[in-house]
Every structure is written in C-alpha cells, then in structure tokens.
Length: 212
Image (cartoon, rainbow, N blue to C red; front, side, top):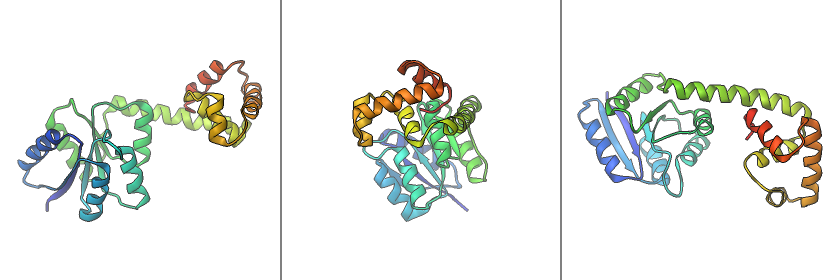
C-alpha cells in the first residue's frame, strides 16, 4: 500500500528534488505538487493524501493559512513541515494546528523520508531542542494567561497583547473602535493591576509570560 503525498513549496527546484527523492521509495506516491497555498488546499481536498509535506513560506496564502483552512474544512492529512527555520511562537502555533512532523531544510534528505514514515505510522517527528522550547513557551503562556485573566478584563488582555506586539495607542484604538484616550485609561489600569510603571515594563511582563 503506497503512502500518498502532496508536496507544497513555492520553489519548483525544491519540488523537483523532493519528487526525485521520493521516486526511489517504492512505497511512496506523489499525487500532487503545489506552489501556492490555494493549490495545496485544493489538492488535499481532491486526493486526501496520507501526508502533506508543506513549506510555511509561500506567497499569498502561506503555510499557516493552509493549516488553518484545513482545520476549518475538517481535512486532516498528516502534515510534515519542511522549513528553513521556525521561531518558538510559530512552532507553538503549528503544533496547535496539528502538525505531526517538522524537518529543517538543512537536514539530510533521508531524515525527511524517515519523518514521513514515522508520521504515517502514527508517530511524531519533532527536533528535540526546538520542541522543548515550544513546550516551555506553551506552559508559560498557559500560566501567564491564567494569572492575567484573574486580574485583567478580556479587553485589557487584548490591549496587553497588542502592546507586546509593538502596536501604538492609535493603532490599538482604531482596531478596537475606541478613542485613543480610552486606550490610555485602560493602560493606566493595566499598569496598576500588574504592578508595572511603563509601556516597556508591560512589554517585558507580556513576553516573560508569553502573552504576545
């Protein structure tokens, strides 16, 4: 029984290399090659592959959007990310979206083959050091959210995240459809509740508690 694959990467040369790699595996069958996120979702819908090998950095609809759309549409191929790098925050997100394997492009091609076999068999393939950082971030985020939610209102939490991500008061006001003065009042209350005395202090608090 063949392991059916959909390959998604916006670089044709990488797709050629992947297809050549998998051709020598007699139990692998590439059923579609995709260079955009839209093509990827359509291919998964059409072929229902065992494994989707996905690059995160694609134009227009990137890999994150593909994962969200697959989840929304209740499509559930085993997903293996093939990526050049992955920050902790992004790693936490993709794990939450059901990714089963992650292989860095700098790794040996044979590791990708082993990863696909492991994932297809029901296992996970996650680089240990990267995974440890992600789990630590998830734990800190959950603990930070529990603590913050006991003393901040939902709107105040939204403002904390916005500040942590670099948004200015005017941007926050426009996003929440409130006045800039109201944002300043919220920030004053947030500072008092969290025991910080400045915007910088709030940013440090948010990042230490993975609230960004």
